Length: 274
Image (cartoon, rainbow, N blue to C red; front, side):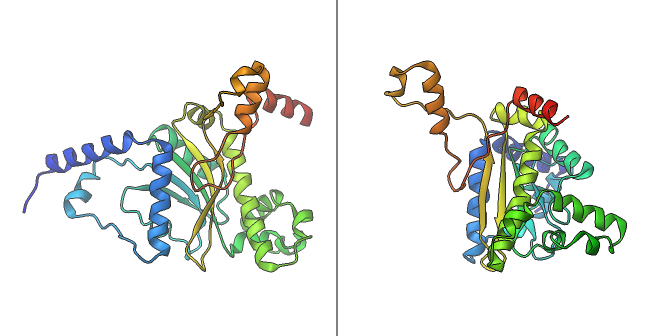
């Protein structure tokens, strides 16, 4: 059956409106369900019809932006069982932020209005493993590769990693540490942080286990979501705020939160470093 370009455009507009009304938590839950379908071998592998693809000619409206690794074993859309136009993907060795990758994520946040930013590391990441090699070894690589690996290396706590004896545990801890460093860097971007405080955006780290297909989420940066119990209302305001902070929880299916420094704390930290 034939269709016009106008019909395809209107269909895309309806889908866009539906996605716009979802909260960051709802978008994250959809991503989690997609990964569950993938590792349980029940993936829907959403293939768009020619009609739907035609609607994407005029616009894109992804709900999620993912900074992932270039590794061929980590095909982002497949891992989360998502289709065309669902995810804005940036892939680079070691899933690290630089000028180009940060600019791409800024575009996704401010222009495409994505609701969730994910930094996705993975099991047996070659870039992270290479970054743990001695500097003399890294300096034998081409200049650009050397610089990229040393940038990853600066974010790894090699002293702490040296106390871990199990090779699988070292791998996971190093990759997770690298992911956390990128989340922390994103949380220092004022434009992105403003969106988080307005509860228009959620940032989260993730680890993809190649062997199982499972993605674990952690280190969430999201809006305040303050909760106070009836008992806490009877105590002083200062203690009540402290209690609200203590009861703050990450989203369902996320292992931990990261609380960025306030603007005043960040400014004081920069002054102390100078």
